[in-house]
Image 1 (tube, rainbow, N blue to C red):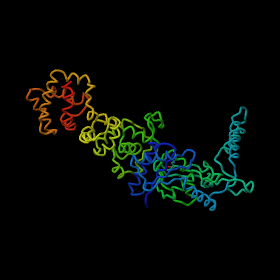
Image 2 (tube, helix red, strand yellow):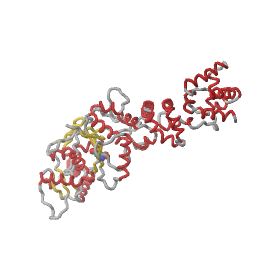
Image 3 (spheres, rainbow, N blue to C red):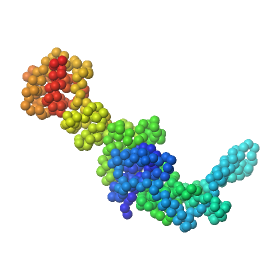
Image 4 (cartoon, rainbow, N blue to C red):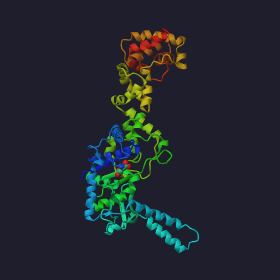
Length: 486
Ligand code: GLU
């Protein structure tokens, strides 16, 4: 059996990080079993679905590298098939035409609420109260249509919906990889509407038909859909279709344990991109937010795809933890290949300076060392600032102090030896500095600060010899001259 999973977002907004996590779980599970990961855009709510939202979902998934194995399926394009299945169920007797109108249902509900109120009145006998309550309960209970047993239509052209006969068995059971085996009473479920009076299919029908037709074997989704599974299973049964395996994953909560909301911070996947998180960090973080495997904290996607299983899904909702996300991001920045990192970093650098060839050459040389100095891309871009900015107009106090009297003398002497140095490598430059110290019986603590002040204006930067190799001879001498000639 080929394992087929799917992600089925409704295109009504951004790609929520909870949705991204669902997509990730489905993609990994398919990959683990050499199966297929499919994408279905559930765009049947015409009022709320937009092409922009579909694009935002695709962009979010592309950023995370969660690419479906086939072109996305648009649910709205499958309406005729949904109708066909509903009619097949009528044909088979598992569904029926129901002539009850919305108004009648509304009246039934109102009558139920009125009875419930009556039952609360003062001065009723126990029996009268119990009987009113029972009447109210019956009116407010899930709907069993009189037409399920063949009652004739009220008139020949009365409009109708198509409803599924609620199962005859006492209970409906869902076996779920996270929630366990759960049963509810069939009486808790309506004769479910499959086609509305205007002929349009309901969401519940569409989901089942699409999952079946797409060959979905495993449904991994948020546990906000767990109740729906009890309505979907009877549709599979009525059609005699295989019921897929389910895993309903607890939703992501905020750091305070409350359901994730705006006040906890960004919920849109692409906002995390814009804040400077790496896609591989986001994946690794989302993965552990709801799944675990031994005590391993950080996974690459290849590592995860080799071990991802449904039994590792956690039963308790996970809490978003921004400190942890930052740690994971820092880890992936350190681990990143420099070419890849530079590609991710360029847009951030471009916000700070012109990305000239010179700047890019310096970045390429420096990144392997400088990447230790930021936990997010914007922090890292800021840590690279000394590569294009000597900060000479904006010396900090320490730098100003280092460039007084003796400091300037050392700087001036160093300029001469640096200029004369034949080789411009880290070793050669380290040697220049050490020889100068030795010749003048000075310590690096006396010689380093004026040079650092001249090169970076006091901006934090790594060791001086590598800094000088990244900047290049010409730039180093020019930065020094600025202070000597001032
Ligand atoms: N379209 C639903 C949602 O976005 C998901 C339905 C499903 O996964 O079955 O919440």
